[in-house]
Picture 1 (tube, rainbow, N blue to C red):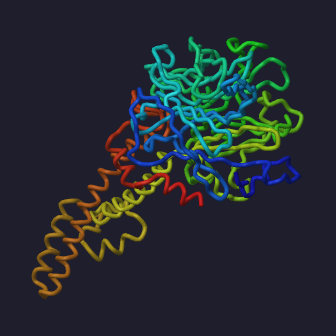
Picture 2: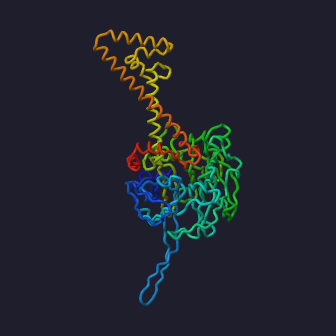
Picture 3: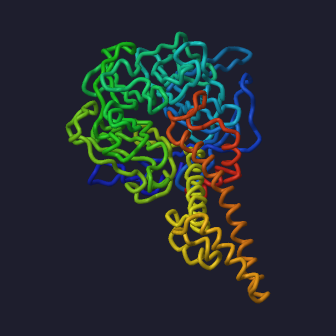
Length: 527
């Protein structure tokens, strides 16, 4: 796997590390079109990463299915190789080391976001994939969606914590476990245990009206507490009481600690004020996770996504992180102990590998750190859609000026209005007088030379055509604004819609027309 340019800057501050010490892996969304399969069929599939100069790209084998929030994990499992000969049976025991991606599947036939895929690889290049490794069931708290898995080994088992969404679109955190996370023989045991929800904290707001009564409480990340042996830390994001009291949307990073040796008993440690919207300028913070440099247990970084781009920004700023001051605990929420947010791409010397990442995850192995991210094609298209909407709104305002509504005129359109329709540009004249003035102007034009009449008649036709086009654009813009407003904030969407997608056929058709291949659009931007 090729090292990523600029990756050495994630090393211990003040020093450089070998480029091979940190490698970036990008999980893209699109694959091969028209290759979708229905749920219920679970043969194992095989795929290879797409190789780029500074990163590799994993695609879900179903071409219209997107890779979204994911767990990035590596383990070693005892494996038995059996060789049968005519005279004997030889059993060889060895450890099989595998990388695992367990990820939320979205798009195509999986637009409802009810399943996780599981891909495993010995080298991050060749993958075997179980596309239906986990799915919603009748358990009340995860009956509607399953999102954002996170893996941790404890008590001799592998636990998968994840976000479950009930029929009312309220979000909670819980887990399942397996005796061994391996390949196709991985079995997640029952029951599915819900362990943490907004009501368990003293600051997260359940059923906030600004999110249409849908509790925002998701994206758990699990790690061992370096200061309390046997205890785990859970990081997550939720809508906080400060933003709630300001009557504005916003998510912050919260934290809880388990009892020693337990995965069921948790205690609220509050939230990180450094992740408030007023500090980060991120209206929808998501996907928090922590890691130390080179697995050293020092120089901790808390990384998160802005779930899109804040106003005035773009895909170069989607991933940020905050540094913890030396000697402080990663569970310490004190504002002064965390730095101002740092944009990842800028920190890496503007290497575009992380362009447009809507979430990230890190895994450490001896001698290397791997940082992965997924690209949300819906977000990329929303950015494009917002720009189209802005242009259409500009055209509509210019046309209103031509029709006599000068207060909404766009800069530079005044001269055009006077040139095309002198009478209609007089916004200070009452409607009746304006109509009379236009009639008089038409009479003058009819009495003028034929060629002037033809020219001005053509100008009127062109103006009328622009008016019709502007009205149609206005209708489109209003429709798109309603859809974008519902989809822009993940929790703010029509009830029954999957996260990140408004379930609007018109909207999906609109996005499809923007780009026939999200992968091509992403690759061009990344390169």
